[in-house]
Image (cartoon, rainbow, N blue to C red):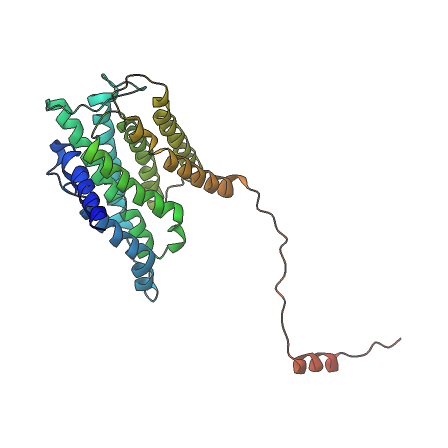
Amino acid sequence: MATIIRKIVKWYILMNEDWPDPRNNDRFMLSSPWPGLTLLGFYLYFVLNFGPKFMAKRQPFKLDRIMQLYNIFQVLINAYIFYNALTLGWLRDYSYFCAPVDYSYTPRAIEVARMVWIYFLVKILDLLDTVFFVLRKKQSQVTFLHVYHHALMVLACWVCARYFPGGHPTFAGLLNTVIHMIMYTYYLLTSMKINTNSWKKHITQLQLVQFLLVGFHNIQLLWVEDCGFPLWAALLQAPNHLFIIILFGDFYYKTYIKKKTGIKTMPIKTITKEELFTEISNKKPKIL
């Protein structure tokens, strides 16, 4: 037992002290895994347990103005990250086949690491989507897909900000910021009572395309030689990409493709024996 404990401690020291990128060591929420895990614990407890119970006998909160400001901020912060992702890397020397992380202390490398940290903080902010659902008593929208996706994005982005702040993994963030700019614009317009009925289907399509492109972007490292980015780190995400594609694909199929069939039946009215006897007694016999 003592040997197992020593190995666990050794691995924890390696993961928390030796392997992390020292440039991001002192940034908020990155010094250790515990702040992020604690936050996710509170998030899951609130949206799945405490929140629904708290709202059970209360009227939905009216959060229209708050959500409009939130959506505007989301559009702006995602546009800011997207612009920096292009100008710092993907329009410069980043290769779409493989882009190693630059761990140097050059101004550009440090700025890239900072942007990955900001992107991680935005994924924490995204958790408010679910909180708003709960406070507005829209618990039916707190699906497994929604909660799983939001929680896992926080974990995945923490890993990237802590260990791989730049290079290959930022391709996913590049695409995701575009999707989120569109998505939060849709939410904003919807809250302003502007007709956006056709947007939802296309946003789901874009999300599916995003996951397929990111999955392929990681898998291609199998045949790219001398990449400089660890293959295991990219392939570790493969099961999650496959799972999320299945979940989003299932949602898309059930929502937009599957034909809703079924025979509508009239509700059956139940009556007592006394009511039946009275009804029969009141009927006049036909005279032939």
